Length: 282
Image: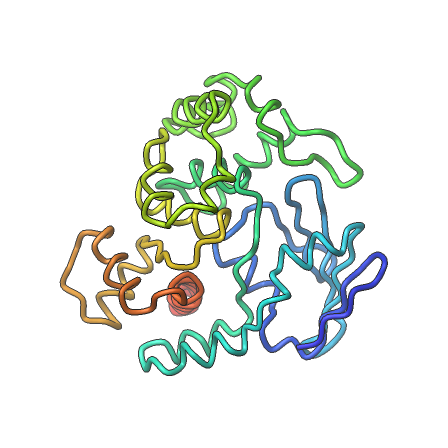
């Protein structure tokens, strides 16, 4: 895969490890939409439009190319990762199907807020809630509204979050925002062993094992995690013949098997299982 960085764009050619739809629909982030045959995504105070230039060739139009080089993790060679995972027979179909998925390197704060909202929720509702919060508390930009900062969200009340569709999650988000205000340091989690970082996250309101692992993977950069939701529970049963029902234990077993490849393996399997199920239902 060739990545060319220009003043106001990134050209991705021969993109055998980059496919925008697969990345955006793999449950990692929630501020995106299809627009004029391409994709528009927003994150923090940045925006990018992704345009298809032909077979496996893409143009990422943006004002801050360096930000999106890091965001899409273009410095990591996913060919090597895919080849390693294909050595596991149970992974081959998922990797071949989900070839364009990459783990995004996102803001820890934005990821934490979005995944508290995501608990026992669906993607359509999550996207609507996140956008309402951005519109009410985020700074106005030329592309709409930036994701709010901690200081901006501290102005919100529980009622504000209920109005945005968070339901019972509203009180948890208020409590966790207060914890951040009082000194809980998300960035320091990057320096800690994964088990310790997970325990610290789970001490926050509204964060259980699955949400903690999503934050660790998508916002903190820990790859030795395997978030287990409904889809991965199905994978565990169908592909691994697993008898364990406890999702924390399922995650632990999968991390034992895949180690530092766990995070990307989870995304390949999640996307493959979810998309093939959708196609069957259609």
